[in-house]
Length: 321
Picture 1 (cartoon, rainbow, N blue to C red):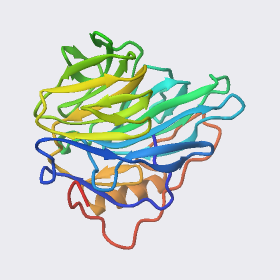
Picture 2: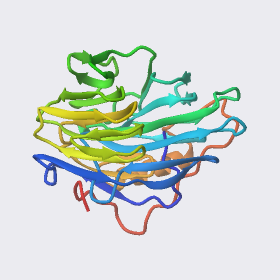
Picture 3: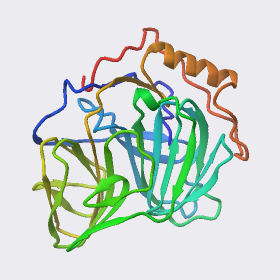
């Protein structure tokens, strides 16, 4: 779970001042970003004008990619702090290694959840023997100030709870949805779910009016609150809803992301989330000096060096530009 941009822009977000406190239908278009040697992703968050959804602060969608004769995802060791990473696959496999010694292959509809806390480093790679297709999403969750220095840890949950309705099967990734609660650790009121919709299904999903929501389209043709959402795009939905209308013109899958609006302003730069320029600068220095973030053992390659900091101080300013 990484941002490999060699010239990362400062992302300043958080605070409730720009939260849309009523239902909206704001379609977000992705920008294309290179991840590692051979994987291209569509970045939905942070986005021009919309930088967070609840505590969700970073969303990449990739694939389906035919990697039968390709190495697939190859992301060398890199650091994180102040966030959780969520690995979610529809097709393929990703091998996770981290500086705690974790070694875990994550497969479709399994939760790979890494809490960086004060500091961790990890790598991600497609195993040598792998499936033909790679398709999934990579996401970050910002940790609140009270928990952003927790001890780092990694969780893998092969079995997750489901909430069902006619034509809808929701796998609960994080948080709670319609009475089903994920075993993944959370630090703010949040929800993440993978919704499989059968062709012709129409449903009204119960949601929390205090949460803001967005839907990431993964595959097929889905209509969310009567808005068609194509794979690789995201529809921001605002707050104030008690239910969410869904309709599928074909078999389709979407990810529902939501949570209470994140109150704190944060600074997100490269693979770090902090609260000030000093937080980020110290983390960069400690990564480059080989302290604090530990060592990822077993990856065949060198760690990724941090980019240069911008010439101006990094300052948190709010959720939107």
